[in-house]
Length: 271
Image (cartoon, rainbow, N blue to C red; front, side, top):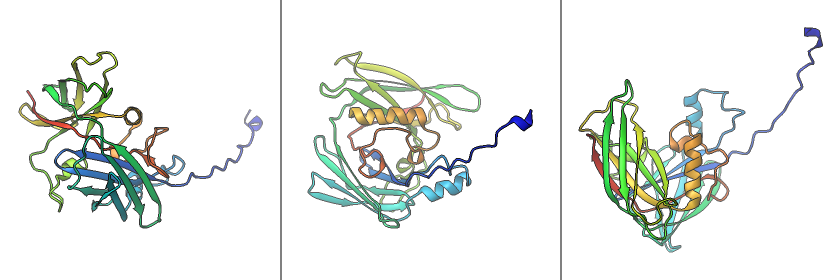
């Protein structure tokens, strides 16, 4: 029977061109963070160790600019490989913010633009600890009144450390590179009535009654909502290094998404 097996056919696949991948994070009152990584192919991801691959994806030198209303330019400072921050940007609803990022090692340049949506605020938040073996689970419940002109929202939650590292810009490094869970919600079913919902947040470390979470609420556009929805379904690691698969992008000549917004941040003491 083995003699009847055909010889394997040689298959040669060219690797796709490497592109810059943009991720953005805004912490109200803390500033703006831009993460720059390089895309990678599934064809070569298994040829090296995870740590070596991760190191090779981080952009080590770049010029990152954000331009407000095509007038005021902010130059972001690098705090570690792939992470660029500015504490001077406070997005204003309706304003247009443009991103220009250039990889100084390869000369690759990407551009993107974001229009800030209207701010919404929580009317109630609560966190309840759920005993669950090695992992800590927190049931996060919330409610808010949606904006009449905004249909898509995200709720981000992360553990708030009491001993945060500080960058040289006075920004909490634990917030700059967070382990954040993103919960998405629309007002399709509720109309303009108050939205109330809840979800389970896995802390993945010891967590106790009296510990704290930071929960943020923001309205977002439909394309960014779709991007986050697909990222949530396909992510396999930290958000800044997980390359979306077939996800929408607003980055010209690159991948990922650049989005700025205003958020309502609440500190929850877990019960």
